[in-house]
Image (cartoon, rainbow, N blue to C red; front, side):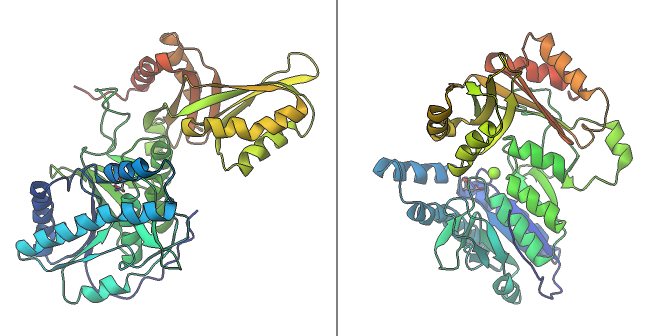
Length: 421
Ligand code: ASP
Ligand code: MG
C-alpha cells in the first residue's frame, strides 16, 4: 500500500489535472493536438497540470534494448533508462505549448516532488510535494509532469510499474487538491468488457472505485490499479476519456451511497484473465500445517497466489489442493514448494491452459442469483467450472481457456451488458 501523506499547500489556482497516454503523444502531430486541447483550458483562465507517458511504444523499445544486453539487467539502471521515455515527452509537449504561445515548463518526477520507496521498477509513492509546481504557476500556466517516476530518499530514479503514469496524474491531483483528474486515452472510456473480444461491449458512464479496482487488477488495461486506489484514498474523481474526441467518457467515483443504482445494476463489467496458470498439488498429507507450509514457502519466494481450492480428500490421509499464480511465476512457484513436497510427500504440476472469468459489480455479493446466472451462462457454451472464488464485489470462475471467449460473450449477454444497437 502506498503510505503517501499530503498536506495540500494553500493556493488559489483553479487547477485542471490531465494525463495523456503514449498513443495520445505518439508523434509530433498528436502532440500538437494535445497542446491545442490544453490551450483551451488555459484560455478559460485555468492552470493545467499535465502528466504524459512515453511516446507510443518507447518504453517497450527501451526495455528490449536492455534485454539485448542482459536477460536480467540491473533494476536500478533499467529505471534510469525507462524514465527517459517520459522525459522526452515532457520536453516535446512543453516545446509544442511554447510554439502555441502558452507559458509552460516541464518537470521530471523528482522536480514534481515525487518521493518513493526504493523498490526499483515497482516503487510506491511515499510523498508528493508540489511546492515547486505551485511556485512555477506564478509564472506559467501549464506544468508538464513526467509520468511513472520519482526518486527514493537516496536520490535514485525509480519507476512505478508499467502503466504507472495514471498513478502520477491522480497523485498530482491529490497533491494539488484537485477534485478531478482527466485521463486521456485511445478509447472512449471504460467498457463492460474488452471491446476487442466482445464488440457489443458498452461504455460505462459511471463506475465505483471498488468495481474499477477489480476490473483494473484483472487486467483491463485502461487504468493502472494503483491510480484507482489513489483516487479512492484521496477522493479524486477519475474521468477516463478519449483524446480523439470531446465526448464525455467514464467517471470513476464513489457510488456506495447510491443504493438505487446498486439494485438496478448488480453487474458492471466482466473481465477475462488469461495471465494465470494453475498449480495442482496432489498426495500431500491431510493434517494441520500442510497448507501453511506450502503457502509460507510461496510467500517467502514473493509469489502472490490468486485463487485456492482444497479438494475433498480421496482417502483419509492424503489431500489435494490447487491454486493459481501469474504465468511468469509458475517456475518460481514450483521451485519454492519443491522442498516442502520432498519433505511431506506429494507432487505438483502446472496447468497453463486456464482462464479466469470474473463478474464485477458493487452489488454482486448482495444480489441473490448472480452466481447461478453466471454458472448457467458458462455451462451454456459447454465450459466446465473448475474453481470458484467470490467476494463482495466479484465472482470469478476458472475454466479451460479454449472456451473462455465464448463463455465471456455468454455471461456478458446474460447480464444485459450488450450495447443497444
Ligand atoms: N511509459 C510507461 C509504460 O509504458 C508508463 C505509462 O505509460 O503509463 O508502461
Ligand atoms: Mg495506460
